[in-house]
Amino acid sequence: MKIAVGNDHAATELKFVIVDYLKELGHEVVNFGTNGSESCHYPEFGEKVGLAVAAGEVDCGILICGTGVGISIAANKVPGVRAAVCSDCATARLVKQHNNANIIAFGARIVGSELAKDIVKAYLDAEFLGGRHQTRIDMIHEIEMRNQK
Ligand code: RB5
Image (cartoon, rainbow, N blue to C red; front, side):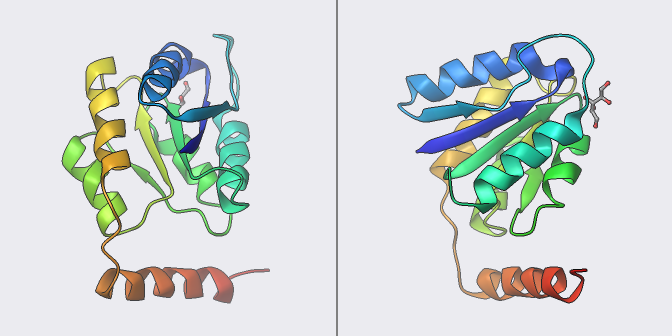
C-alpha cells in the first residue's frame, strides 16, 4: 500500500520508527513531516495528509502528534476524511472494520513504539465489513454535505 504519514515535533522520533516499520512490511511511505524537533503546528500536517488521502493519492494515512487528537481533528476537517485516534489494537481494528477509517492517529506521548507498531499492524490487517456500517458512513457523508459552506 501507499501510506501517507504526518506528525508534529512531539512525534518525529516515533514517526521514523513507524516509517521504518511500514517499509519493513513492504509499504510505500509518503512522509509529509515534520522531520525536526523544533516546535511547529500540527494542523498543517493533519491537513496535508488529509488532502492526500481524500484525493486518493495514497491508500490511507497515519498521523502522530503528542496525543493524536489535535492532528486528527485537523485532518477530519478535510471532506472525505475519517481519521480515528487509536491507543490500543482493538480500536485500531474496529475503526477499519466499522468506520472504514482512512487515517489512524495516535499520540507519541501516550503510546510506546512497540504498541504503536502493533496498532498500525492491527489497522492495516483489518478489513471494512460494509453492510450496516456502510449505511452509517453514508450518514456521516450526508452530514458533511449538509454542512458545507
Ligand atoms: C504539542 O505540544 C501538542 O499540543 C500536540 O502534539 C498535540 O498533542 C495536540 O493535540
